[in-house]
Image 1: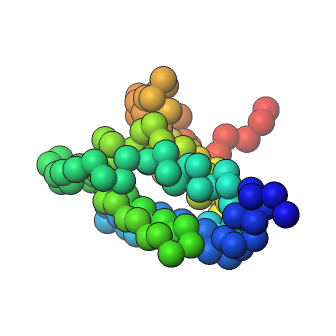
Image 2: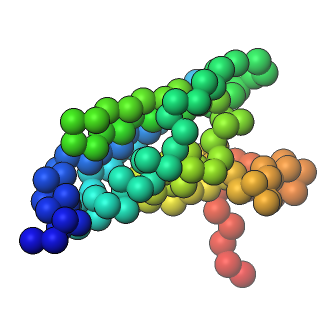
Image 3: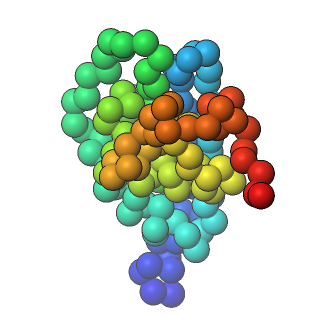
Length: 140
């Protein structure tokens, strides 16, 4: 067995990531979890190891309705966790969270707190009444 196959076999069921987002207008709590199969473990390990787990990030809740993200990752016996303000949800953190959410069957949407840095949040003035109320537009 090659080393990458051996590593995948050793980590079967041992790679998991849990993301919890709290805050927002209603102070709601959302949770997503990914437990990838062994053949996907190397890609997930790369995503996990790409995050700056040791960086000191101060979570400041200044301003109303801010999200806070808690990320817990396990790769075999190694466990890591971080708590991030919404303003730090970019780069490798964002990549990891988007993968977890997609694995859980949830597409990333601006209303879920993950906003593309290029586009930024959608201004309420640019949304239709239905979009502001969370209803999708019907095709005409």
